[in-house]
Length: 455
Image (cartoon, rainbow, N blue to C red):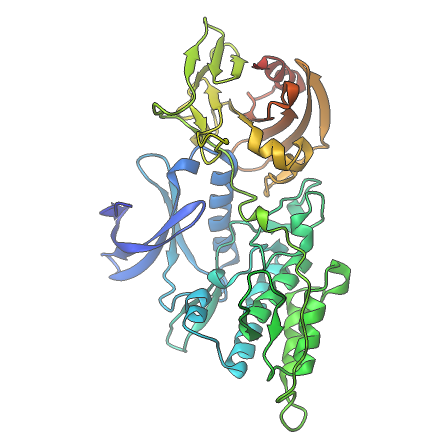
């Protein structure tokens, strides 16, 4: 990956890390003579409405909360190619994942750290936010005048509880996410983070297992009282866990406080919780965006006379004044190793996703998605956290039974519509994301769906 010389006013020094949706660079502010972390949305997701929405919402949320236990956000900006970036405080102490890679942490510091992490997550819970992805890589350390601070990072999967809708997202990291996060129709609330805290504790206090998938086992020096707290935190049913991160932290602090002698020294807890995660959902939230610049290996594009456009087996009738572009569904590959077919249509296909004033639509066809889930399950993976969801409706258009979810939003686009259905002969799952023109209703959506054909 080539390092950019500058991002906005910041000189880039080196790459800090890459993820599914973003790249993080270490930058230098020449005016203040300080280092910052610059998180840039990945190029192949830059035109996807949900991903841009999630990226910017994380920066807005951190800025709004502005708490010493959360990663501070200095500003946001946009690259010349339209990709947003966020300027964050640099966590010069690295991550918990990096520290654990160097070896196990002694019991007392590990327990102290867990209490600090729980206090940081409690800040989110007090503000009605579910993190959803509490992993060692999302726990950072930053030095300061009063000592090292523990910071909670990467709220890209976070969701305001007040904005929760009937459609919930399957998102998180296998091994740390709660069972309900692996259920398309499970209700995810702050108790999912309690489960994540419990799994973090097991990682910090556990014995490394030789076999992948083997049950976790705590070290012998872990007090039985602490083991009992972790058992409750990682209970399969949310109702059996602690109510929130603050309650978990308080229970852990009490359990770790000796009441005489060496609590639990030399004793085995025998704690081996059963993992109930299907490991095939590691990237449940990562799927959408058409590649606008084609290559020879992509699906062939054929322009139909005036009002239609074809990408592979997909043909769409274009609304008046709209054009189409696209060669494949970025990140979605078929059995032949090629991108699965997709297209974008809008009055300006190149700019529609980055400009809230432009209507448009993404259309994709995926046999691989159809093999793992149906239309309802797929839409359940794709909420808009800051938008209000209308009741899901169903409509039959052009021989396809569609599930349609509509979202009204206060920021950005006022309305976003998600639709999914199975193509004829189970050719694949058809997914349509629509930013409808202002003032249009269900008729516009149904007409667009009726003009879609799969051959």
